[in-house]
Length: 256
Image (cartoon, rainbow, N blue to C red; front, side, top):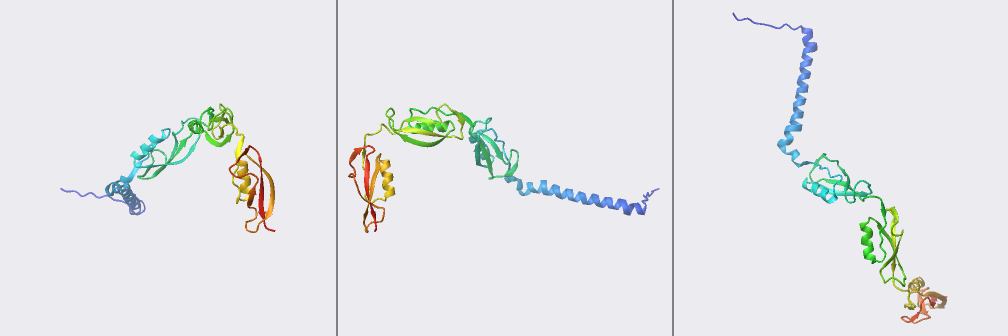
């Protein structure tokens, strides 16, 4: 004989507890299903993740190798700057952004900071080499070249470095610029007189000093056909040779 079984649930319990609980379970189940489909299933179906790559770790790697690692991952490299680092050798990567293991789109630029090596260094000896050779030596040592001052020297040929400032062998910060004193040969005994006629007084004075001469007496002459301050004549003929540091007198136009 077939028997029928029934479960008796109090009406108050059904409406107040059981039904709301079942509704909540249904709602959360639906939300969970949507998330799974949206985050896991659909991206693989439509290929959203196909253009997303993992950023490799290039910190403490030589810059060229780090750039190659990014290239193989489908990423670009941008140098954000360079900084001194006592623990990471020169031209090695100090940091990267985004960080390693980040997920980014292919083709994105990853910025890196490259090491300039230790900040403190010893200024190399560049005496008795050419200016060009000195520049190469300074660059390899991590120093920046400052001013190059040409000076007369009886003992050094033209274009040979006489000394540096700060001096060679000095231990200092690589932020300090190093000036060079370069020979322009023995000091001459005579100078060639420049042609100053038609030049302004300011330009004429500059050319006189650059020629190794001295500005002498300046007189003024009325000349309405010339701009005021124009050189009319000079005391020595252009192209002539005169003793070094000779005075060169000038006649300058004025309008009265």
